[in-house]
Length: 227
Image (cartoon, rainbow, N blue to C red; front, side):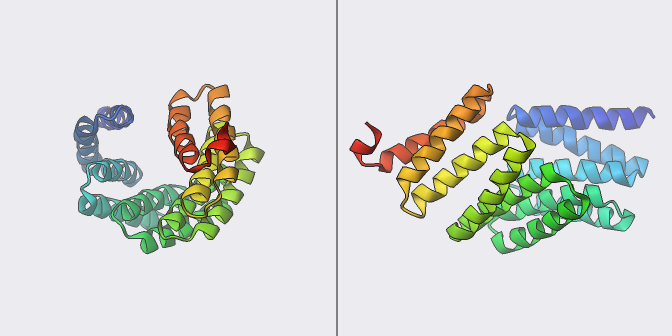
């Protein structure tokens, strides 16, 4: 049990370090967690450690290593029939593929993840997957399709009372309307709602990110539209 505790502690510390932007320290912690879980032979714990390390490798720009780790995590989930863990492994793999520019493959993986979420009725994960697919579609220039996915995500976030996720969803809609569809007036309304929602619920870091979206929207508006 001692090694299991050490591996879990390393993983938790690695996640915290990653959240703080200390990527190299997070990588070292996650790598050691993978090493220990391999020795233990616990496949579920190993899959979790592999997925976490894959995320950090992607953060470092080491997409080849990240994809290898994500593939191994996916294989373990399929081997042991762990559907709930599989959706997480697929999310990691899709993120790596998207960051490395393989958008079509990333979209395919997200589609399988969405199917699992729907089958298992995991609504929180489903709304996140819809938003991720919208991001890929927007990157491929499919703005109308991206807005359709964001509309679905918005509905779910409202139903689930998820203000932070809703705020970012609205901000993403505003970005697409401004940059790809030439509709900055609509975008301004959405961006302001998103900013106020994040601020009212105390999500300061999120509000700062949305503030950047709002500033970009205002830059393309005629001056009399924002006075």
